[in-house]
Amino acid sequence: MQLHHITLLTGDIDSTSHFYTQILGFRFIKNSVNQENPTRRHIYFGNYNGQPGTVTTFIEVPRLGTRYDEDSYIQGLDYYAPAKGSKFWQQHLTTNNITFSNQNDILSFTDPQGTPIRICFIAEEPAAASVIRNSTIPPQYQLLRLKNTNIYVTDLDAEEHFFTEMTGIETVNHLLNLDLGQSITLMPAEQPGTKRFGRGSIDHVALSAVDKNEIAAIRNSGNERNFHFEKEIDRKYFYSVYFRDPNRNRIEFATLAPGFTVDEDLDSLGEKLGLPDNLEPLREELIDFYANEGVNFKS
Image 1 (cartoon, helix red, strand yellow):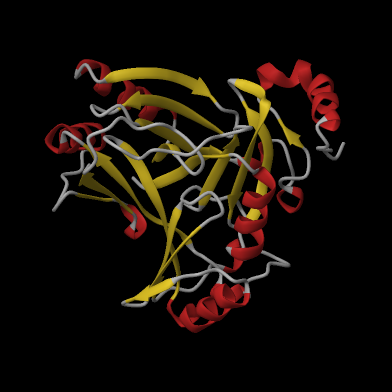
Image 2 (cartoon, rainbow, N blue to C red):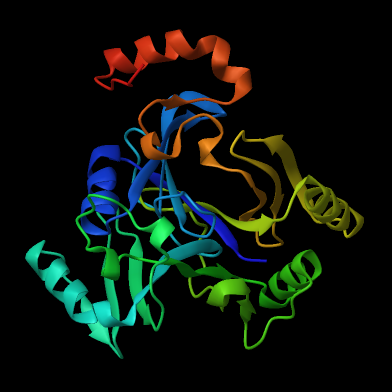
């Protein structure tokens, strides 16, 4: 099992898109909407193929306020980069006026919404098929995939039990070790207040499932253990089940297929308005709505 994607909230979709494509060098792989509220955009970034494990997504929430990370929340995006890219990335961030710290060759900084980001270097080269064409980042230095995110909770024992039962993986020193060197770090929350979603909040973290059969097994396992089932849904690009962990964080399990090429050719990902089947009858209405908002989609 590996990380599938991480979804955050943004109050400024333009600055977010610029940062993740021009600064971090990801490909804009899907131009979609929030399926629960299609008048809000949902945009996806990843490697050239939109491969699970590389994907970071953002739901736009207009007039989004300040987030309060207090008693229970998910925070931080760690990415892997090729080891030989350390000097390049330091220069690239400096050139783009991104303030960062460098501790043990881990570069730490924030995105425009205040989300903590770290680039961690690993002795690995990008696969040729995943390299992003015409990126601001040379192929040999492009980010490889997600590495880690952190979940802060008040009940650490219950959180570890939840992940062990749902994934079959025992935590080690509060670390859920996944495939491909990925992980989720479970941390004690240090603030006594109640969290409030805002700019840069992580809405959920998604773990991968092989197919719908594994989704069904995960759903049944969670229900048998009386974990908080939220919903099961076909997202078109993957099939998902959502649970709330014992500390109220949203955790998703999503299939590896069919992927983002189900409605667009690989070479033209992110150009058209991507919609799930149930919203297709509203396509022209949504295109008109967004045109009035100054957003134009390719036909």
